[in-house]
Every structure is written in structure tokens, then in C-alpha cells.
Length: 329
Image (tube, rainbow, N blue to C red; front, side):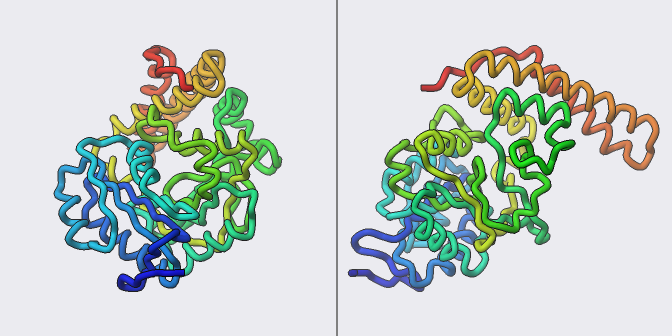
């Protein structure tokens, strides 16, 4: 099959095995580091790399164009969010498989080939995710259950924790992510997606600006009969939260707005109301417990104060903020 070689990437002139899509927002140097990590792991694979600069204001577009001329650069004049930015790249992608990776995710040697092998060996799999590690090498939870009204009660009343080994109740928090497993969804920090699954369900719902868009996307794939899987054979270091690190209040607001939209889209107003009730009760109980810790433990006082403050804010938010998101299609 015809190809050209740029550095150590075999750049396909017809259909690549993998199209890599990276969305960058004000992370110029981090993006270049990610690109180098990806390029090293693509050795011998027919690939194309697409970077979407998502309305950055830090000179990212020029830095990427200068530092990685072998990557295709798409410049968006405004920040379209995670889903919107990835959709720009996915429309341009030509590969048989689609690797979506965050700018703060760095494949360890052999990670991308391992994901590709898994997808090739499991024809019913739409998405496979790797084992994620924190910067210190500790495991990072990457697999989660789909949000449902019932699960919101189980989590807020500690039922899922109390029954953590029950196969249909556990929420993957206590699973060491050390074996292949079919899961509800994997986070979008690094995922390899089968093109046919993407073509069947379409791209991300751009009404999710950030957060919950990958759970919605994989839920739609699940509903279409596909599996979502995890493999520890691929390992990726993921720093997490780099783009939004400087604005925690906004990040919290966007996160819970996305969760609201997910519940409304897939479970209707009754599901959203159930979520809000469960979280209001659960957060109120937890805020009270952390307040008690703050009163009796000087060593944990600052931690307890911050936890109690956040939980009290969330309890008020979930019970009083009813600016509903638009219902999804």
C-alpha cells in the first residue's frame, strides 16, 4: 500500500490505519509534547495526525505549525468545546480507526499498537480505552458506569460503595483496572474508535460543551449494539484538568450542567429530578459530616472546610438552580 515516511510515521497516501485527533486549547507546549509522544508510538503504523486548535489565545496555532509541520492543523476561531473540537477533526479524518487523545495524555511505548491490536481482534468493540496513570505512576480511574436515576441514588446513599463487589452495582472505583473488561464507558482522555461505529451513530453532541459528551457518545454506541472495552495492555500517562486548571468554579458549573443535560436527554425530566433529589440529600449529609470533622480535627480542618464548602454549594445548586438545558435529540 503506498505511503510516504515523515520522521518515523508512515503517512498513508490512501487510507490510514489510524487517524489521530488532538484538540488543543491554550496548551501549546503540552500539545507539542503530546505530539512527540504520539509520533514515537506510531512508528510503522500508517497514520495521519490532525490537531484542532480550539480558539486558543496563547499562540498555540503558530507553535504547533512550526513545531509539528507533519501534523495537519485545523484552526477554529472560537472554542467549540471538547465535542465540537473533536468533531472538526473527525470530519477530516480518513483513517480506518480514530484515536482521540487529549493534549495532557502521553502514550507509553507500545500503547497505540496495543489499542489497534485489541480493536482488530474484537470486531464487536466500538471503543477501547487504555489503562491511565497519574503523573506519579498511580492508577487513574478511567472506566465508569452510565449515569442513571437509580445509580445516582446508589452513589449518594453509599450503596455502590457498600456493595462494591457486586457485578451489577459496583462503579469500577475499587477495581484495579488490571484486566480486559467490557465496561459502560471510558473517559475520552485517550480512546481508539472504530470508524464504522462512528459513522453509525455520528459525532459528539455539541450541546455538551465539556464533560459527559463521551458518556453520551458511548451510550449511543451501546444502544446501537456495540461494546465499549478496556485493556491494560495499553498504558497512557494522563495529567488531567490542564486546560481548565485556572478556573475551578467555571469547571464545576460546566460539569454539572453537562450532567443535567445527560439525564434530561436520556431519562427525561423525571430522571433529572431524581438526580437532583439524590444529590441534594447526599451532598447535605456529606457536608454535615465534613463540618463535624472540621470541628473535631485540627489536622484535617482545612481539607474538611473545603469539602464542606463545595458540598454545601452543590446541595444548594442542585435544589435551587433550575435553568434547564435544551432537551437533546
